[in-house]
Length: 235
Image (cartoon, rainbow, N blue to C red; front, side, top):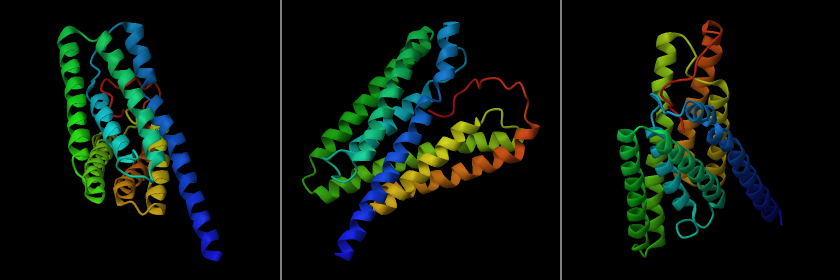
């Protein structure tokens, strides 16, 4: 009876961490909206880069596939957060293509087709593996490597902040959302005994702490009239 109560409490804690992670992830998903308001207002993508959204879409789709019942039966909240993320990224990419100049438009369309093609290969290839444990391991490793790469992308911004001694290009709420989301999914992965979730999110948590520490260290010396970054480093 005691073990049953402890197990129930464990499941509740896991689900609570996953739900909180989904909520905080929403802050990340909507963070590019000011950028796209500017793009729509000016009718041009200017010097903005569309690559972060392409990579984020691929990352969300791989992680979404890992969270699906065909790969892992106990990661529904991984499925939900990455499904929402994939929708947001696809909308951003569509808007980028609409307002981009022809060379950028063609390149983004090509990359989008490549992303869907690669994802199709991953899905079809993994379904050919009859051993469910091996299937989960392979897709889990792909998801883990993809997440680690995504969480490593802020290293450029961290280097920029240290070099310029300014947080102009590192919005506080974006860094906070990254930290909170990563921490929640770190706990979710630990409660679920899933290294493919807690390892990359543990790295994301550490990087989030670094970003917040840098923000509080340098924000007083930052320019008061900061402008929007020309290259979006988060998606």
